[in-house]
Length: 93
Image (cartoon, rainbow, N blue to C red; front, side):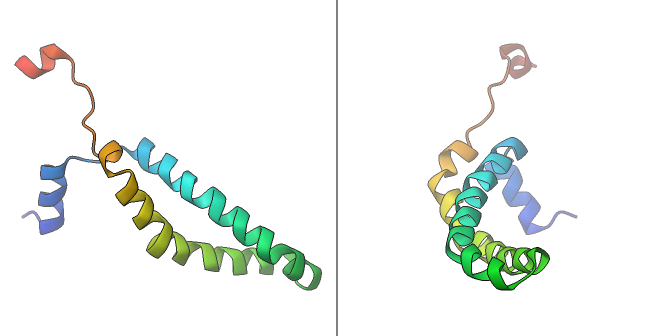
């Protein structure tokens, strides 16, 4: 039995893992860079690196999940869901 989510992905087509990995990197890099630029001078002076990493990743994960990735997925929707080119022989069979 297929769930509603699996039926939706079949009708819309699957998103390439390569495209999602690239889009994730496009979101993660500036998010981490901005947070480190804002927080690192203050935090690193007073806290050990593992604690700084815990704080930064604790901020990055929710930002990526609820803010950055939804914006990027909407912005790049057409690119993400663009069908892969199929060889002409495969289309005929």
